[in-house]
Image 1 (cartoon, helix red, strand yellow):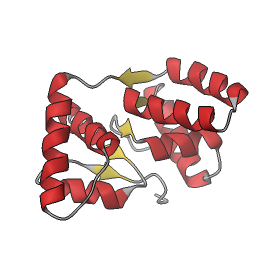
Image 2 (cartoon, helix red, strand yellow; image 1 turned 90 degrees about the vertical axis):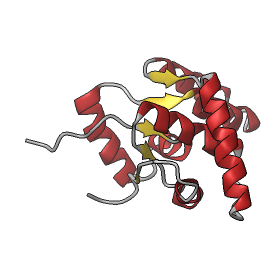
Image 3 (cartoon, one colour; image 1 turned 45 degrees about the horizontal axis):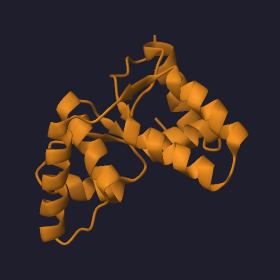
Length: 145
């Protein structure tokens, strides 16, 4: 029997790679995860980034497909406490010499609040977040298991 995968929060880069289907390792991890959990969990911050990308490319057909798929999964919207935590993360990281973007800080804050590992290939920025003392667990589906 396959190893049970815990519920995770997907970062924008991994979700985008999965939707495009270009990285077979990501697709394989996602397929295994979907068999166990049925739906993917991500934030509305990620939805914003995906919509922005398709709008920028004027890819309305792809955008509609993505929106339909996204609506069939679990979207987490930040709460006030997530914005406060994200601001603290961003300020602490800046004092440590790292310049982080709000979306990464918000996604990390949500993952910490929900006590879910964050699946990302963007390990540099999220390691900088870990260095602020935030208890953020990371996974990378780009790595073969």
